[in-house]
Image (cartoon, rainbow, N blue to C red):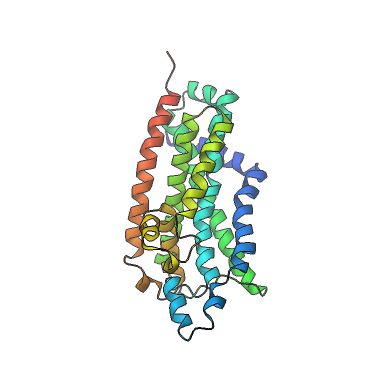
Length: 279
């Protein structure tokens, strides 16, 4: 079982690495947001004329020193969403080209087939998310708005950040795998995931300053998995940010894990049906 899972996971990672278009697409939109939206929208300038502007700014951004820093942390959650979109599409193309049928007819177990796709879908977004964070810091070094990390580095914080990205990636990879195993046509698949993509992003705290949201929007956003993930990042990247959140990172990681388990159970059920021998 372990050998099968390892071999299939390596195959999935190789396939992803040999598809630069998918990697570029996963990075393009977050980079455009960082270069355009993040640079143009500067809430600090809007509050600079107010005597208590810095206080209001910290409250609106929940401890982040600048809007761009708040926004850059949010983009890591968006990368986890966009980078996993192609995981479900690969299932559909493998079904159309007969690859899935041949694989399921081999001695390899359905668990290994599904698990390899899920593991590959979890690993890739972690590298992309840290790449986005690195680019956001680099933008500040060249004179643009950049990510300012104000908290002291700690091993625990680094582990929490990696866990947050891994879990949210597992959740979205499971979701898109479930859709991929349920839908046979790629056109239908991309129509469904595009209907999920923007609503999930726009109802999270990835883009909007928390303090500017109406109460009902804050309630919706607080249960959004992207919000849970980026909250863990913000509490670890910005000094004093924990005082602006009701819970510590462990609670938000627990909420993320609940989302991931629910999506995993749904995806395994649909995958088992798709991979079951047809009588």
